[in-house]
Amino acid sequence: MNKQNWTFAFEAHADKIIDPLMVPGAIIALAKDGELIYEHAFGYSDVERQQEITLDTVFGIGSITKSFSCIAILQLQEAGKLSVTDPVATYLPQFRFADEAASKRIAIHHFMSNSSGIPPLASLFGALRRSIEDDPDHADFLPPFDEKSIKELPYIETHDDLLAYLAASDLALLGEAGTQFSYSNDAFGLLGAIIERVSGMPYETYVKNHILGPAGMTNTAFSIADLPDDTAISTLYTKRVADGKPELFASPYWLDAPAQRAAGFLKSTARDMLRYAEIFRTGGCVGDVRILSAASVAQMMMPHIAIDSFIHYGYGLFITPAPHYHGGSLVEHSGGLKGITAQMHILPEAGITGIVLINADGAFAARGLLAAALNALHERPVVTTEFPYPHYVPDAAALAEYSGDYSSSEGSQASASFAGETLIISVKLGPIKTDIPLAAVGPDQFIAGLGPGMANPVRFIRDENGRVCRMLFGYRQLAKADRKS
Image 1 (cartoon, rainbow, N blue to C red):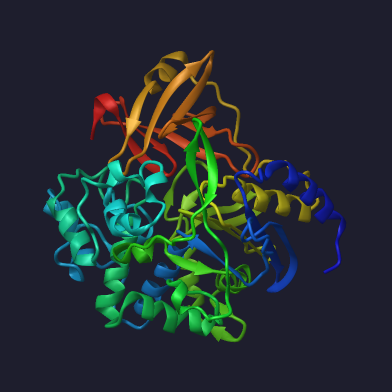
Image 2: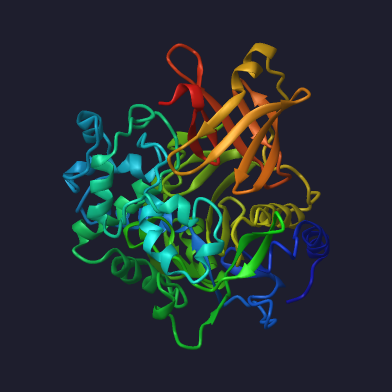
């Protein structure tokens, strides 16, 4: 493939932001109107063996799997077998928690849009527990994947186990269904249960028969064992602590959580993921094969609930409506798990699709790589910020209210404090502490300053009395220590 001028600017920038100690291997691929226009690999799929990365090297895609689950639900809706407005309890009568009346008001739509009101819970780690314990490297894992964090959790190995866990919990909803955004792996895990019960087949089989096969995604599967024998598989790298500092090490065992596969356990390649992204670029087709109706794709890409002034959530996708992404819209999702970082972008108006796959967890460069590449492709400076956030000066009284410790049952812990006049979010992962400065962009709204393409929204949420009770951070709502709710 011939080099174009924009690629030199992008690759020079990429070499600056990719830390080879934290990103062993990565691939970026872009297509225009369905045709590959750029691919570039960084590092190796296996550093020790210096194995090259190609468009057909398999990586994990993590939570990008959620959009596959939403496609499956909408296919079943098109077949007349369900409606997204149906209550979840219609298909999963065991779905209940302390407030049974509120649980009955949660519809499939609320699961798909992360607006059910279910707070972040530890159930994903219960679903992963057996897999973590079977991993030969689990003694080196950092929280919340470490032995101490998971040992008190029940084994959640089936959808029925997950439903029982929710029913036995004393969780209180964040708000009425449809009013509060908070990312929920539980909701998507249970979408898998609905797909099974309505379709009459295992979730994984449904996805293979109705999405992967028709889309020609021949190197995509939930299990490595289901891929062709000659498939190139990336080696997974994860972090451990050595001399008080994080270091990557090769850890090739893939974690699994059968009860939550619908939330994030597909493996795929850059080539296959560009084929998949065509569904959203074209309004439902991959080549000549229709996967989903144009109306259903529009329903997926609708901004169902706001996260901040620009970013919304659709169905299994983050949505920035036009004209807020450089004059157009942005459809995207990320994914992460042990040894996995992934990012998918679709620019519908420009006909551009893009994917970044990395064989390490916590590689913040993934989104930054795509943002920089798209800047360069469209002849913008590579460091151009994505969204036109305004400068905002909050009053001193409001700032003081934000200080404190925040946490969730999922294991997230963060504190808000001041360094001079700058509000700082401090996150601790085992012995590793990271301080992230925040920039105010509106009342109770901030962005975490992680650089172009890597800024994340932070929002402080107030109760009915106007007091700060929670913080949206990492797309989850964390409760303030003195205001547990």
